[in-house]
Length: 225
Image 1 (cartoon, rainbow, N blue to C red):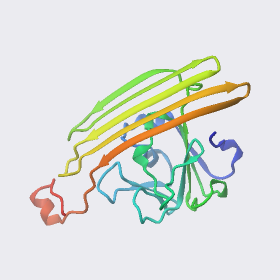
Image 2 (image 1 turned 60 degrees about the horizontal axis):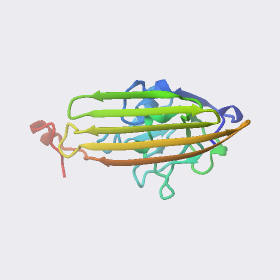
Image 3 (image 1 turned 90 degrees about the vertical axis):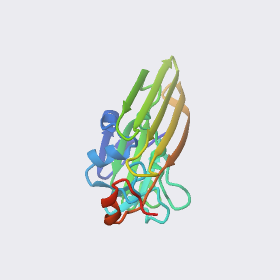
């Protein structure tokens, strides 16, 4: 499963697992915006977990109605939703990512890869073993916890990661919560492998629109409805 970068032509940028988690962001978008050249983020919804990714003038957005033009894959499976090609970035388990590749436009990535493609390779027990836990906290009720575990026993390997994020937001009605789970069971037969993988995500994201400057001057936490 997955896509081998060595077999494809075109411009490529690769982010390692350490680069992806270094910023401590709640989603993979922070590392994309910080480390991938040509990638920019736009926060039109007022929530850092619900941002748009721009590459070469095209977008991969969770918002219906946006002109999408970036194909996103996880272990070779297309993550763009069938209706509208939207991408739910907050549902991707950050701790479970082994490598993230950002490609220029290439027809091998199928439909609507006009601006390029992002391929996410996930961890497995064959490549990652051990146990790791992480906790972080901050102002405005921000908290994040992650736990990952990997083991290999002969020709069998298992990997699992769980993440939880909560954030009260600094504006009224802007609180958010995320829960993500990823698991991979793999079997090796000589030079071949077969994997059974599953993902689960649940999110509640508070999004608030622009507020008139006169209202914000009275109360910086105010929202306009």
